[in-house]
Every structure is written in structure tokens, then in C-alpha cells.
Length: 193
Image 1 (tube, rainbow, N blue to C red):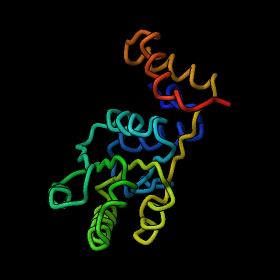
Image 2: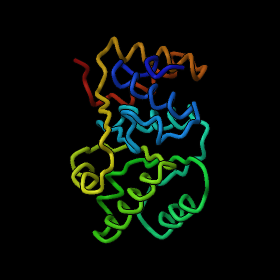
Image 3: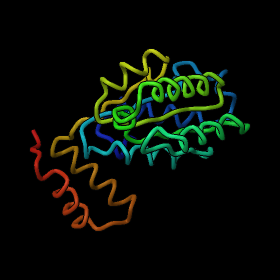
Image 4: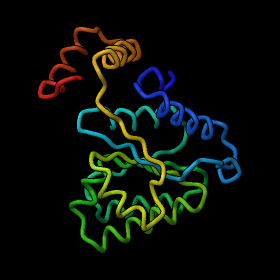
């Protein structure tokens, strides 16, 4: 399924599809990386589908994925060591990067971002992350040359939401009533324009 079918922003969907195409050709990404950043960030308000897009992206590529979430701690650095030791192309997926950075100490943040930068510069590691708040992540990441490519997911209008629900119901083989009920709970406190 094309990302255009589950996103309401054609420009972002085309960009996702471009990344997928580059990865699926399994050629040396350092030779094909015209316009391809080694890391990108999906950001937007809570409940908009950032984690879902992260999962869809990971499902669409056939590379080993290292999932980093929670705290920046000894386990996080152990995973980065494992990525560094392995051969071949790998993806590091980070959900809620803004929360990880918010609760980490300054030295841990510096070391974590330096390690991510070094890994992405190898040409064999790609980092994809999500964040609700873009600004604090970018202020830190810019110092390390990370997340120069960013995708902002915005709340869909009623028509766009309807199309997303229809496509998700087909993809997940769910009944529309179930999705509408779940969507209603998520967007209960929000209004569509």
C-alpha cells in the first residue's frame, strides 16, 4: 500500500515512498543518496498517527530494525553498540524522541546524539524518529547534523479523516464501526475544521 493511501498529505507520502524505494533497491545508499538524509523525524500533535507511520515504514522495508524507546540508559547504548558491530544496513527506530531527550541528562543526550551521528555517517545506518514537539528535538539534533529531513503530520479535516479510516479499514480488515468508535475516542476533545 502506498503511503498516499494512509496519509492526507501527498508531499509527505511521496517522500516516504522515495525513501522506501531507495531502501528496497538494496544498492549502496551512499551512491544513491541524492536528496536522501540518513535520518528523519515525523512530528505532530498527539494522537495523529506518528507511531503508526513509524510502524508502517518499518513494515515496508526489509532490513534489521533496532527499536529504541523509553529512557536513554545503559540498554540504549548496548543497542547502539550492537548496531555498530553488525555488518550490513540497519534502521534505528525511535518513538517519542522528544520525551527521551526531556528526561535524559545532558551528558547522556550528548553521548547519545554523537553515537547516532557517527552511525548515520557510516552509510549503513538510517534513523527514523517520532516526536510530538519538534523544536526541542531540532535544537539539539541540529548540532549533530541529524533529522534535517522532517515530516509534519497535521490533524486531518473531516474528508481526509474519512479517507484515512476507509484505507485503514481495508488494510487491517476491520469493520468501519470499530474504527469510527476508536477514532471518536481519540478525537473526542478535538474539533475538525
